[in-house]
Amino acid sequence: MIGRTAASALSRFRRSLLSAVLALCAVCAAAAAEPVKLKFWVMGREGEVVQKLLPEFERRHPDIRVELQQVPWTVAHEKLLTAFAGGALPDLCQLGNTWIAEFSALNALTDLDALARSSPVVVAADYYPGIWNTNVVAARLEGIPWYVDTRLLFYRRDLLERAGIKSPPRSWAEWEQALAAVKRNAAPDRFAILLPLNEAEPLLALALQQNEPLLRDNGRHGAFSEPGFRRALQFYASMFRNGWAPAAGGAQIANVWDEFARGLFAFYVSGPWNIEEFKRRLPPGRQRDWMTAPLPGPDGPGASIAGGASLVIFRSSRNAQAAWRLIEYLSEPAVQLRFHALTGNLPPRRSPWRDPQLANDPYAAAFREQLERVRPVPRIPEWERIATAMQEAAEQVVRGGASVDDATRALDRRVDAILEKRRWMLARKRVE
Image (cartoon, rainbow, N blue to C red; front, side, top):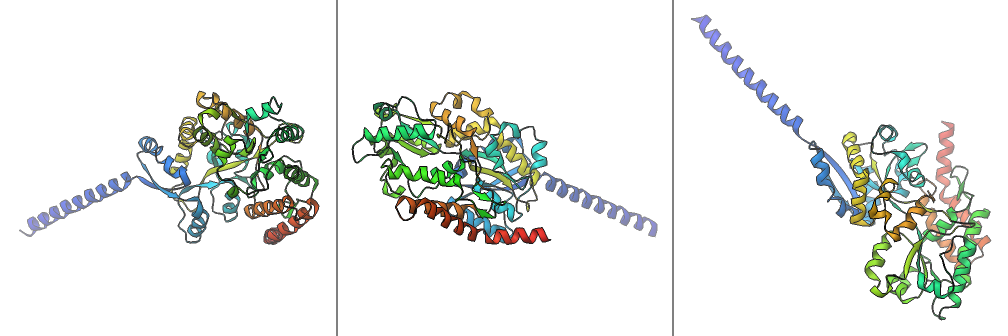
């Protein structure tokens, strides 16, 4: 009797144990089937547009779900630094190219070299070198270019032809001739070019065309009083001194597109977003009168800035492999073409440019040529402060507050003060 009771109890225990094991397996299976939740922060309008690209990614990768957060550019930098300090960074993020060095200095970014080398999608040789190099800091690849921004000439063809200029300038000498001819042929209250004094990019592009770097000693000191930058600043200031450009900030121009259509100026240095803006905002009667051209250089076609945004994976991410899959997807040429169609942002790699959508766009052709000649700014965390100082020094020269020599010497002193902590950190690192 005792044996049968014990056997019955043992049987019940085995059944309970089996049920528990099966329940545990079911829980484990459910946990295994739970998709990875990938946190992705995107800035500005791109945050609205990328949402349309994600369903196809999630269809291909049912084990990944993307939690997208749109962040306004106005608060993005502060939000990222706060998240870094609080250990709350997302898995991956869109970063402006000039921010890469700052977050690299914080040791916040994943080294993507090995992932890129083994990727069948992210092929370094297909990217424009100047754009790719904006993501290389201290020989580490810390971002993948997502879209590119550079600056070149938007110009009024009819105003140039009226002034006897048959083709857009390719060198500084030709540019000066064109500017002088347009101004001579214009009414007294009109100009040859618009260079808003609160925009640093036109002068920066001219400076990047020089052989000398903007910083020396591995980014420890300013090199703005060297001949290269002085030459760029003198050329820039001459456009105002000769009356070719109005000494005005962007806010003083009521509406750039209306004034361009009205003929207030014939040349405007701007970026790719303005292709769609000019198509949309200029009246139908002016649509055949404008075109784009690469920036002239000192002795021929010149370089321009390598701007735009890249995709990075933060070191704190526990889902780096899933994040890399999303970067690969967004880097596919076909996806980049769709992204361009939705935003007007330009692809950072050459293969999408062979598609008729871009290859047959006459306004984009100049950007394609310019992208072969773009150069990154110094890849240091302090660069944006230095760019602001450069723009302020240039405005002082234009408004007659300082000579080029005095302004560049003062700019070097100001930049050296900005870089004081960098010099201390580099010296300490060398000692250690």
